[in-house]
Length: 30
Image 1 (cartoon, rainbow, N blue to C red):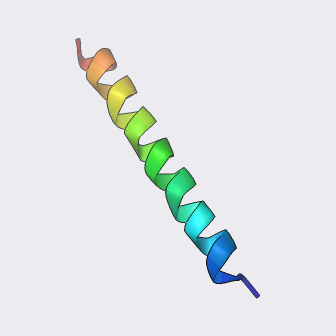
Image 2: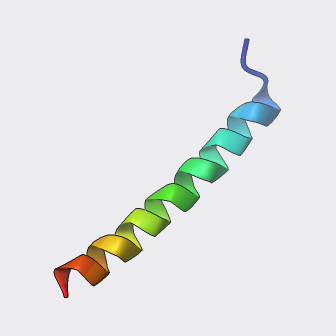
Image 3: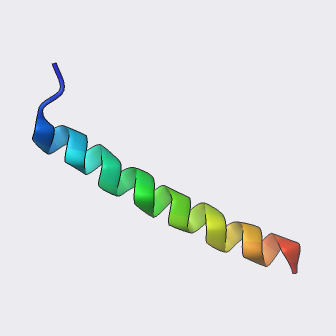
């Protein structure tokens, strides 16, 4: 079972990961 605490942590990590991906994509397009 996944607890709500660990689930929220996963969401935060996923958001940070997406932010990094977007930054890298912007740099890659340049």
